[in-house]
Image (cartoon, rainbow, N blue to C red; front, side, top):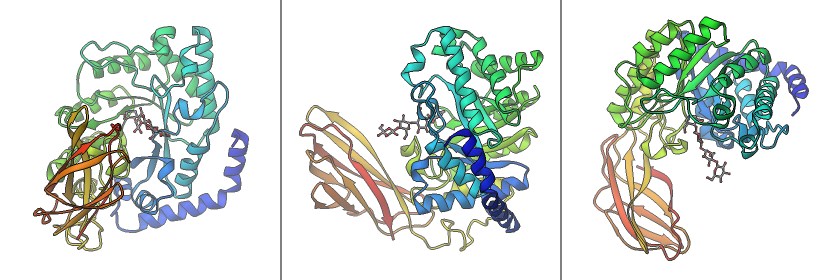
Length: 451
Ligand code: G3I
């Protein structure tokens, strides 16, 4: 859809938008028992990354529409998706997300304009002068198309190296245009859509460290010289190697004190049960303690579609059941969702048995491998579970332990042997040995069902 058509179409769908506003009002008139409505009660948004390809899945969309007040396209606004060849913009998938969000009264974060990754190869082959023009054209192309429709844009993403140096990361932009590319991108962005908040976004900057110090110094410099910047995004991808830092709130606050908003932009925390819930609580409490922390976005709706799916890092499990982390976030936001309320799907007491299954390869040799499938009960105890595993056609399983398989072609359906009974949140695993027979591909694990 062209820019003009998009704006015209927005005007034509004013009735739809009005209906969306009614939907949003209906949400907030209910008790604050969803993430979005509870966060709104704290003056914040609560968002999620969304993939256009999942919007046709009823449970995905129902969960999205019920719980969240902001969406970030997970991949659809990136350079490779929107300008795969120079000057040819494609917005089909991104428009699908924006249109859906607007139909539900949700806001949209833009992610991301200038990033070294998911960058089409033509960009890297340009000389400096051409690259500068292409960068500005790209910013203008995206921000023009969505002018007035995006609450915050990640203008530049991940421009600093990890590690202790605080140096800029090598990229076509850095290597050919130098440090000034970030400033040029922000100035171009301000002119393209003056209403959008302009953010710098990065990871491993969540606590006070050399990398966050380098970003801090850049923002301080921008503010002192009048370079337009409104916000800093803290991605907040956490796991045992990168836990929630103890100085998280302090770090958010020092950025806020520079005169920018701060946003938690890609939150996910690997783990499960009460430990994961406690970590989520820390993050929400840190944001709420900082006046200029305007909102939080989790990096996906359900564990099963997370970029770190094996780490089950999100608030809803693979069956869209609320996890303990969900209850913790809702409670930290001051929501009235009552853990134990039989009306809340996934809460203890709702009687819905559920489980999730994740696969890992535990051993590997030339002709074969060992695989392990871990089954984790949801918020209810379970007495049995069933998981399907589809193997690549050439592969064959020679042995399987801690489970009972039945076969249909290359699909094995596995039920417990001795290990069907699991407490809420508890795990068990079965293992198997497979012959590769020429295919090294991983098997696919289907949905876990429990009773
Ligand atoms: O769409 C293609 C599909 O056609 C193809 O068959 C398949 C084969 O691999 O790839 C699919 O594209 C994948 C895409 O996600 C959509 O699923 C890419 O390979 C894969 O690399 C891409 O991963 C994304 C990653 O960014 C790439 O850098 C993740 O979904 C996305 O969650 C992740 O998000 C980033 C943020 O943008 C920036 N911060 C870190 C964060 C996590 O890595």
